[in-house]
Length: 258
Image (cartoon, rainbow, N blue to C red):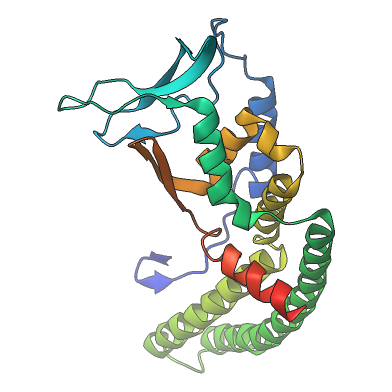
């Protein structure tokens, strides 16, 4: 920071550390009061898909073929009149599973991938440690130059203008090195590991033989993995979100090579 025409190194510290802030937020989330909801029919796919007219798809019970069935239907709240037919919830589930099934992995595959992630974490941690040490080695001479510069100014060996100019350049270099050190520390913490493991857990869930039988689980995966979910002419469509979009081809290549 700059004050009275001279550059100074910032020494302030945050009142609360990022780790403590995250812990407090997690505790507040655990203790928050659960929302009240009305008891009623459970329609797992309700609010998941949109109709071709742009309105949301709802659900209801309806009689047909001598029985009572659950159907997905348009809410008819779009800008234009909609004539899309009802579609059986069972059909919605089957079509969704057909789109999701290329993502499924077995328990053995999930274990192998987790082991590979753990190995990668160890390798990256070691590499980050070496880079952090390199940055620290570069910081030491900068700090030494700052001390000698200050001493030279106090001993009146250099004038004030030269002192301020040299000090500003050294502080900029020191700040850049400290920022690089903090970035490497964040990288060392493995910020990518938790999202990667979450992806693997989700893919393993879809590889579970009981998964296609649970409509609630299928609907949850569509909401988590799918983008732009639509139903038109009784046909379910949705794209795969990142990072799932490339997984089917990766799995196919890995299985063929194995």
